[in-house]
Each structure stands twice: as C-alpha cells, then as structure tokens.
Length: 140
Ligand code: CMP
Image (cartoon, rainbow, N blue to C red; front, side, top):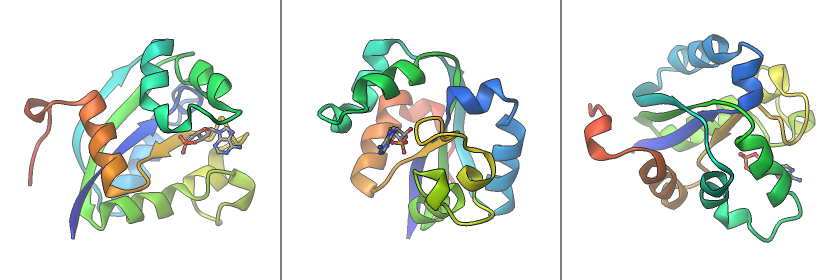
C-alpha cells in the first residue's frame, strides 16, 4: 500500500551536519520526498506536535529539545512507507536499534535520536497536516 509518513531531522541532526547523510539513506531505500522544509518550532508548536506524549515524564524535556534549533520536516512517500522509514530509523532507544540504522549509527541519547517518524497511518495523517498543506506536497 502506498503510504505517506512524516519525517523530521531533529535539532541534534541538523546541528551535527547530518542532513545529507539522513537524506542519502532515504533516497537509497527508494522513499520519495513529497515535501520538505526547514523550521524552528516554538515550545507551543512542539507541545502540539507531541501531544500524544503529554502525560509522559519526558514531555517537557523533549519539547524543549525539539524547539532548541532548526529541524528539517519532510513528507515521505512509498510502498509501505511508514514501516520502511521506521526500519531505516531503528528503535527509539539507539542502544536497541539494529546495526545500519540511522539511530544506531548517529544517535547519542534516547532523546537526541536524530530523526522522528510517524508510527501509524493515523499519526502520519495528524503529523503531516500539522506541518504541510496540500499545495506544499508533490504527489506521484
Ligand atoms: P520520537 O520517535 O520523536 O518520539 C518521542 C520522542 O521523545 C522520542 O523520539 C525521543 O526523542 C524522546 N524521548 C525521550 N525519552 C524517551 C523515552 N524514555 N521513551 C520514548 N521517547 C523518549
């Protein structure tokens, strides 16, 4: 099934010069970039983005981190795009991520884990619409 997913290169990835490395990996796996921009979120915007985690102990810290610098936000498109991109990222905790995944190779911390990806079709819809309108996305 053709799917779209929301991908973010987080502030640690941008600051460490990993934009090119991350984008190369997604292109190598055949995922298409349907939209892309660089933004810096406010605390409120980061809280809205991560609202499903509002009750978690790491909510305040992760929302501080996500607005601490610019991010690259992208819409990726491909067959089984959500799962393929999740496999490419690796587990949230880089210590548990498989070899060859972005997080295993580049992450330094469970929070500073370089990339974000939607975890389900419902989340993907919410997250894509959070950052992009239809005119900003290429289809096909
Ligand atoms: P992400 O996949 O973007 O979703 C929530 C983010 O919260 C996660 O990546 C991490 O950056 C951050 N985070 C910090 N601590 C934890 C934790 N214990 N479990 C899950 N996510 C965490």
